[in-house]
Length: 272
Image 1 (tube, rainbow, N blue to C red):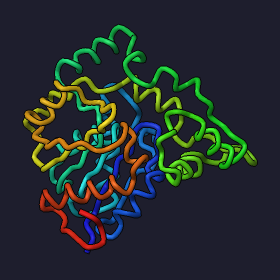
Image 2 (cartoon, rainbow, N blue to C red):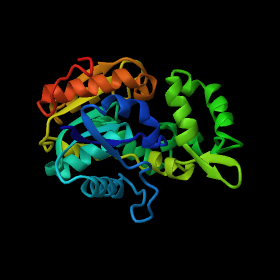
Image 3 (cartoon, one colour):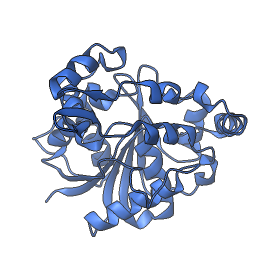
Image 4 (cartoon, rainbow, N blue to C red):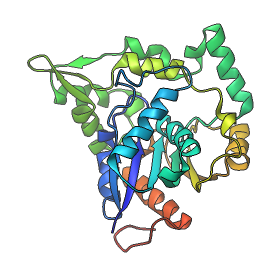
């Protein structure tokens, strides 16, 4: 019997483009997700993302009737942390993939940057609204992404999935980004600065997989995550986008983490 697994995606990357990682997890988990968080007007993007947390909780409640294994990448990891603190009954455990779980010092900096209007200097959001948003075909979108340095490390299947499932029809023949740039920009501008409210309150086991190259966590953040959130931190090869660079290896490490928590079992079908 497979375990229910809820996956929460990173900002601007619809959950469907993680398809290769999901396929590797499929022998052990029934994977469910919300494809594009933040696009339902009933759950608007506001400071600190409270409505996105509500949207995530609702998605879990609607898709399964027992506690899930939660996996969140970047934005998704933050949403699942807040959701698990608010509703521990919904989760068996968490695996957080290089999410911005900032400690008190960096959180104060985020608060100040938002208050003084220079938050774009601290996040990737500054160029979001100026990026190209439409292409004539999936193939042309793929070729465009292939030339961009941010996608240079992507697994080629994941890059093709981004071109296909990360875009949607626009007019008669064209394609546009499924995750709308205005939503992506709003999410970056409203980055939470109150993670300290979660200190000592996480009641489910959790593992944090940090990118080996350029993790969003700094030393002070690691101390906060380990000591005050109670998460074990392990390193994973790749950059911040490692689930799309190394999807098979990421799936293996996710499964390994849940096995060690005791919420899943080992199997010959996946390397441990």
